[in-house]
Image 1 (tube, rainbow, N blue to C red):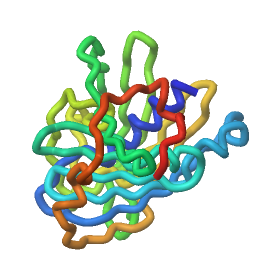
Image 2 (image 1 turned 135 degrees about the vertical axis):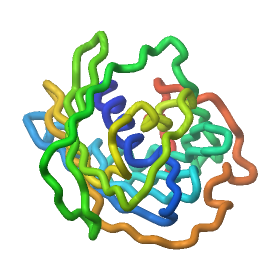
Image 3 (image 1 turned 180 degrees about the vertical axis):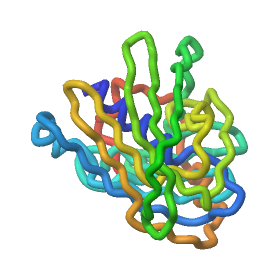
Amino acid sequence: MKKTLILIFSLISLSSAWAQSTFEGTIAYSFKLTGDMAEQVASFMPTGYTIKTKGNNSLVAMEGGMMAAMGTILHDGAADVTYMLDKTNKKALKMKADKNEVEPEVKVTKEAEVVEIAGYRCQKYKVIMTTDEGSVTQYIWAASDLKVTPSKSGSGNMSGISFIKGIDGAPLKIVSTQEQLGTMIITATKVTPENLDASLFRVPEGYKVEDFDPAKMMGGMGQ
């Protein structure tokens, strides 16, 4: 299950922790898992999630499954810090980077396919990420009309689109297959440009900031 969580956070980071020069608003994504493990982990997996973004800040809220009870994920782009917001216990769990973690080797190939997703023209890319533990192949469909610039590295699990060089625009679809887990499919279902209040992207007043402990991440946190 730990590897499942890591992959989910990795995929969500591709569509959340980016700063863009033109888009401000909300993007809704559907989430689907196929393969032999799908039924076994269905109650745990989300059915979708939404991202609110303003400047280089983002707020991610998962929907459905046990992961929806984990809270919302806030990325403060100015400070380059990520928090998991636990509304029930009024805590902001700060997600630190692993300074010893080796950056994966990434190979990006632009493919011929261009499709429309949520009203945007999206270019398909093949991305192969290789680490000491092996490689993972992802297919990403990115909308160049939703301009992105790399976020800083090193603030935690949700800061990581900066190493995906060679992709033009925001990911509106991500397909990733991992052995023994199956295929995860994340697809944008609605893109809503709108003006968002800056206060949405700050740790709420009265919340206690603590370091994030992965071992306790399923320990009764509320949405």
